[in-house]
Image (cartoon, rainbow, N blue to C red; front, top):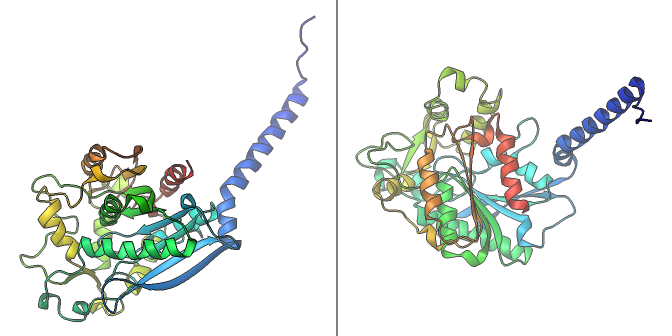
Length: 355
């Protein structure tokens, strides 16, 4: 006698039950981070000194309440790019939760830092004068020094010898250079939209520079929106930025610089000078071959600021890492962290850190 199949009604009930269990699993997994963010994430803002006199660096720290990481693999420090501060992107809530929250909810102790002249960190005195009264300020070497001060503060707080580090755009050169000089203090390295050597005659990602650069430049919200969507056709731009996100990000970012004239945001020009003298001139500012720690590069296909060939270029120069990985995300720009595919971005980074 052959095997007698389940009755249709029993089979339907079993399918319904399994569907319910699977739906419940999805609901729990998808909402765990939001629940933890709403109910169990502790946040602390504080300042640390740096090598520059009279300069204080702003830092933010988030983690699950009642817990404190004691191993290097569970601590991450993030730093921003050339124009905007760390907190208004990395810790901008979208649907009630930020990238920083997501990582904290997943059990990481997460920090961010603003380099001098950015966000809530001290502005150098040159930024209180007319821009053309002084040469460019806050170069990559200054950013590396400030980032090193933040790393050392975290090492002391957690009594560990190394941590994970992550940089976006210009911040990738900050953390890349720092790691090449301090492998012993870095557990894993993440380069988001990495800066590398530009192709010949490439325009600056921030637009054409004046013949003589002043200490800083000013940026309007309109120019920021145009830069975000640069190179996209109407179909690509449609729905890319979730409703209200650009406005929330812009309001939070410009609020960090209330002294900006005519509602413009001030950004130091040291990075622009570095790009002109090094990255556009084919002279890398550091040697990726000196990086020995596991390294992850993540990039989006519509990035008009730092195109894909730059990520590929630096990837090929990472010759001595313990291992390396490069992920290209579809349907995203330089700012994919705040766009519709941000969860793909988060999951790739978390997978690398979890390994």
